[in-house]
Amino acid sequence: MVSTLNNPWFVFLAETARDEAERQGYVARIFDSQNNTSLESNHIENAIALGYQAILLNATDSDGSIANARKAISAGIPVFCMDREVNDAAAATSQIVSDSYAGCVELGKLFVSTLGKEGNYVELLGLVGDNNTWNRSKGFHHVVDHFPRWRMVAQQSADFDRNKAMEVLESTLQAHPDIDAVFCGNDAMAMGAYQALAAAGKSSTVKVFGFDGSEDAVQSIAAGGVYATVMQFPEIIAKTAVRCAIAHFEGKTSFPAKTLVGVELVTPKNIDAYAGFGQQ
Amino acid sequence: MPRWSVWKNAIRFAAVGVVIFLSVRIEPLESRLQREKVFDVEAYVNGLLHDSLAAPIATAPEICALLGRLSSATDAEWASLGRQTAIGSRYCFLVRGTGIVERVEADAVVLRLTDSGRSCDVRVATEYVFGNEIRDATGMVRLEDFDDLTTFNQVSEFINERIRTQVLPPFVNEVRSHDTVDVVGACCINKRLMGVEDVELVPLKLNILR
Image (cartoon, rainbow over all chains, first blue to last red; front, side, top):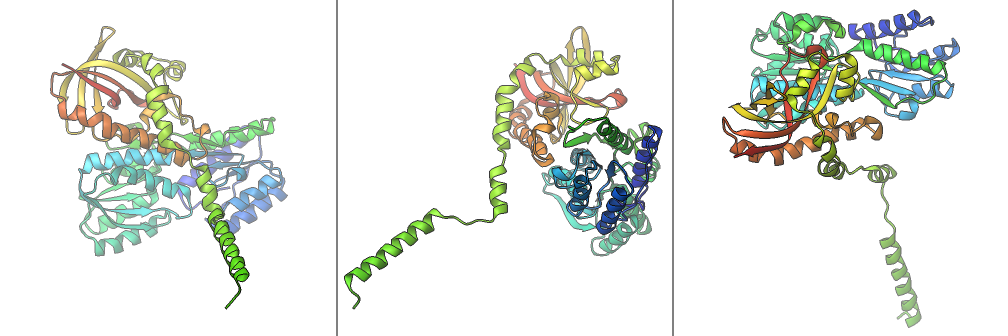
């Protein structure tokens, strides 16, 4: 059950989980929650009614999805969260998440070591109800805020969405034309931001930083567009979740509350070692 | 005029009221629960740095010898030599060594170390100390021992703060090219990218030998 299929990263996550489950001999189906907790709730009820025995959940909202996940747990169906946390350990059997905070600490280090110790930047946040949004932002700020001559001239949410990011940055550039960098909470927004900068003739002077390691961002880094991203490994997340579900079917009852999946910094220097979605 | 007994009763009630007021404190349940759960990260980090790490540091491998071993290590050897807190290719190591300062850069000191008949160059970070290298390399700080990721991340923040404020300033002020330096620290190496990326050491202890 995936938060949205409107972002290629989540499509890859969902399809990898489904394909892996089928490869292991299980029946699997993808439900698209379209970033809507009510729809997610309906999907959970349907999944229970249809007799699915485990839910691999990419939650739409860290708080808003708790009640939905609890419904499955109450019905005796294990819930394994993929990539997105729910803020209640009892609402999930186990949560397999990227180490977003650590990734953005590394990105913050790259940001200041590349651009120097002063300048102006814009931050584009993801969905405000998602923990990943804040873990990424906090990791980045944990580093950059140590350098007081870096000034964040605007911080706005663009909901992890490429088009919204483009619109937000276009209007931000009207008020703050003199920026040196844009930090984005995911690659879709980084691509949208880059598009806005290109349209304004600023793409060669303003560096864009993203997060995810999506295919288009990796290609953009290789082509000298987006400057850097943090590679997540959705294949590892999906396969670990499937492995946990199978272990549960086989009688395992104890799982770690959280499992971290490592992330890696992708820069123009090491871009040759990467392809989209963590593939090598 | 009220009688003295009325005054006495009034004073008694007032005294009881004051006692009750002083002995009862009302606060929102949420903040009370929050307060009770607070884990003293600073004390935990103090204990880690001052007591718990002594043994692992004493047995930490020498840097060049470790890098030499890793260059031809199997997956199982990486797993036995290194520590991980996340699934992936990145392993962290506590290491030590003695080297000559090759050059002092704005954000690092480059050391040429020689141990076990092998030489290697290592960058010692002096500016951007923000990551999880030390926390993860100790192998003693495990996610499952913490309620949440925020506290787990705070362990690194406190460790790094200590290094930035106590370990680095005296060293950075004194160090010169050609100095001999004793270093204990941590580095994290991506198994898949070994050789592609420079090895950078986050120092835990630095001592200039003069």
